Image (tube, rainbow, N blue to C red; front, top):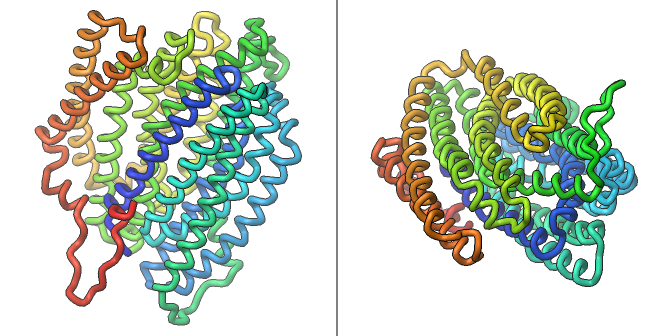
Length: 550
């Protein structure tokens, strides 16, 4: 089942494409046809509380399981790999049940803390998803440790499309029947919970089938206590690091909602206080959430690289294979930047037509400004995410935590200062995000300085080539946008708007792909090797292709 790092990343990237398109259609549909901006504020408020708990499951725990199993398989000890899974899933079920109970029992109280009380019902409904997330963390970590990414990919697709079909339908039905923002948001989230349950069922089935091919030899394994200790040693710093940003998002919500209304109490002082009504504050916060949702779409395509690089780089580092370490480092930076740079620049240049296409509101200009700022954040986030994952692969799990904590503190302070400045307002929130990522990038590269020997020059050359290709792409897209927008009122008709936006993006893609090959960032031979299946020995049985099945 061993795949190259790039093949593993490609499998997850394909799945991520479908997942994020489904997620974007889901949020756009419920905003347009059910919840509107005020209802979306309720929806996003509940999700930020959920993410505060679920990030424990989706960040540190699968990383810990994946890294431990990858190290164990270097020694070909399948017995210990199975024991790591059994210990981890029992442990994660207990943790998941406890956190789900907190969301179920204290949902209304958590929502009130954010000054967004309508989110309470949605938080309680999301408790099911939180429990399932912990079960999935053990199962996905097990497969990822084997560098077998198909189960993770397919389970993500199941979650996304059940959420899209069931959640969207329930939200629309409830709102057409006279439901409120509270009940409509909860209806949408029921689809999320059902999707998570079905994904768990699929992963359990796949695990049972996968284990039939594994032969246990009775090799010596570590004790349960030693495995739990190692799980927490790896998982706690990673989970805390991921939780930092979730906590920061919750604090952001608290600050923004209060600053827009009567002011946010911070220690003995009160910051801001624009005097807006609760409904007006919800509307502005919903627009901010819509822009952040679009930012999350391209940012999610970096995750496959962080997930895939971990077992590959860990195995190379443990076996002291310097060539593979340098090769994986170079490829990880190159391919992640090939995605992040054009996505970020594209969002900056085409922010208004993209936002207006997805969200028909009276506040398109405000949403477009925030989306353009988030375009820069896409590029910065990619570097933060990749450098953090590389540090984890080298066993330096505490270092990303330090940079995340410092960055999170910077973000909270800047959000309070910028949003409370009348001339900036809510636009200060995405600006604070960008600045906090810059701080984290400098810190991560400082921590990585001794591990990057032999790869820095290649990474910089690839980055410069990709940047030049992106600038050419951006110039072409802006030229087409200027020509078309000066002749056609692209915002008068939804159909014309869709066609022209696709034209902008189509021109940008063609120019970018041509430049990538022209500057030899990627060669046809490299692409063929990445996409192709490895040659099999005569006596080796055929196995299912991850790419073909997906």
